[in-house]
Image 1 (tube, rainbow, N blue to C red):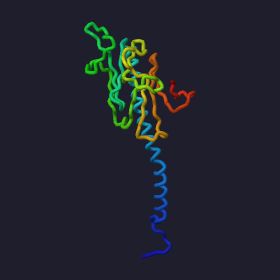
Image 2 (image 1 turned 90 degrees about the horizontal axis):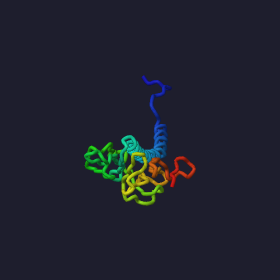
Image 3 (image 1 turned 180 degrees about the vertical axis):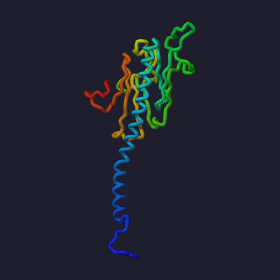
Image 4 (image 1 turned 45 degrees about the vertical axis):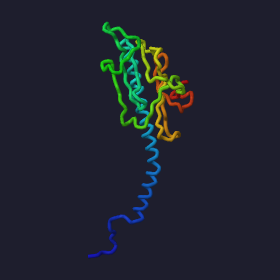
Length: 198
């Protein structure tokens, strides 16, 4: 039997349209910010990985009283930490390293899906303006940089060229002559602890 005055369950067409309109507006505002967040997160992940590798190389050099090399593998975030070659009498071979000698590799990180679109560039100055001509840095037994005869970088720059320049947070990792390693943000002004020192 049909009764008047009872409200049937459900939504009106206007309620559905208002809800969809609000959802579209929220997505239109939120999605670009989320994409920027993911892009900056990828830059940070690759920079953190390289920073960890450099710190590992320096600590292994001090711990093992040896020369240890950190080297980039390509330009997309891969790296490896390796011991100097020693002869039969366990004597170091004057800053010689062999990429094919598996026993000398301490740790190796290949690029992951997190490093998609992130590029790494090596520079011979802390301001990251001059190409390094090399993608390595060597730490000596005292934790300082060693093997001055080899072309080594002083700064690594991490960037995502697919992002808008105003939104991205490119990072830099620097290695001082005394072996100090730090991550900095080139866009932050001097006086802030996150700023890069030239």
